[in-house]
Image (cartoon, rainbow, N blue to C red; front, side, top):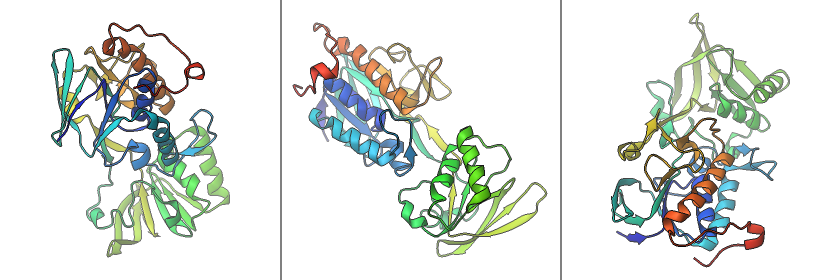
Length: 337
């Protein structure tokens, strides 16, 4: 067990949490990062490590893994302490400091807390199939960590959102065939992506199985042999596939955060838009876990929120030390802390 004294405790080691280390470090503040996953990266690393990301400034395209690795390299000068594979269970306020205890028994004393926990603890929404556990992590996958396993394979992708559509487009160049399954004609993904998917289904190896739903799985020893799908008229089709990728979104929960007395609406922290402070002084919400009028759930929005929260908390960490704003092009990298 450790007793750590720091300026800011960051809960969440996803991209926004990692960038917070940089922003705080540039202002001379020390940080400690806690995450319930065994490695830094959050959903980027766990759910779409190889999925292309197109809206990070200055990167025409990158992946979840590449983004996380670059962020980790960027924060190396600040020597932030990481407590992984554990969650923050308790937070108490004593003598103008927050005393936080993790599920592993570690205690962190900090002047402020950044909650950058994405959507909270998360897991995939699974199709309601009796024998699904038999095939999970072998031929049923809820995320893509290695694209090369799909080379010249026949796969089924189910779902109507961005993940389903984007992966169908991305994997169409290496697979033998893709069955795209959705229960209704209308897809919820970005219009440009839907347009591209439909174009590919006319000229490539994507077959649209719409409107159908998964009815059952057949196979043995963890390997799928066929999927049975049915439409609203109960007409069935059997699809011979090697892999099944269901993308039905995430099941999320705030966990212990919901018990800390913060203002919460629909499992999201309400924050002050100008500085991302929650209803409790010294506790900030940044990234997907926070909400305010006009909020956009984008990684780049979370980066901006990390910067705003870092500048605002400076006066709480150093009440007698004025902050003189400087651009990084003038200041360089602050390694004094």
